[in-house]
Length: 269
Image (cartoon, rainbow, N blue to C red; front, side):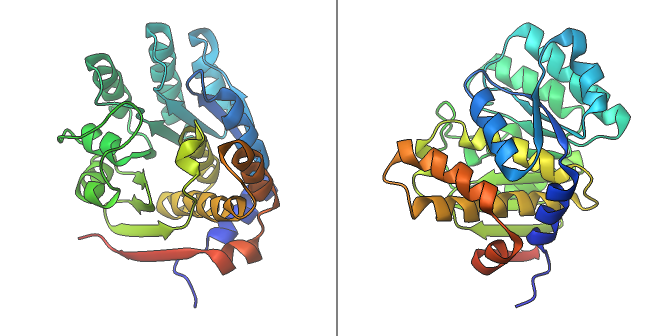
């Protein structure tokens, strides 16, 4: 079957270009995010000092911002970096970790949202909260399904003029006009901390140099889903899953991705 979206082409472009991805992420995620980005074929940089964040964001090919472990100086650096990326025409991704949990998170996310991220990646509760609806969020977990956040994701995508990815048992991606559903992954993935955070960096890597933000975001999640399936076939638990996942990402090629991909694309309601 011919797919309307060809994630394999986006993966090939990433391998050819090795984009430099600037990440301002949480303290827990730095190591795993760097390893995941290296495995997929990107070049990661963890730069969070306000004194250099804006300058580096303008040099990098894309920026990923994660609000998992906030502090005032880091939030200012995030805002500076996002503004610099926007001014330089570089794509940037917002990961609104546990955005509904506290007033400080909501206020910080609002400052970043005003800078029009090219993509937002979160779980259902985070996306619903960011769209100013009621959410059943508990920390960084989600008590809602991805499908239940579809309306919020579409509204949010139209608001920012970009894409929104909702990760769950079946992932959703929308740009307000189209909706993609990506099947795959493995039940152990939520049992390995920061895999979601790392995915936001992968989305940034696929956005770098891409013409269609929706297709690039779908491609990022497709690679993650297929690599998760492959890793789950060899993992005995969370401890062995992470190295198996890195190996699967590193070895992922066009033929395997296309053969194992389960993707549905439709018009947004």
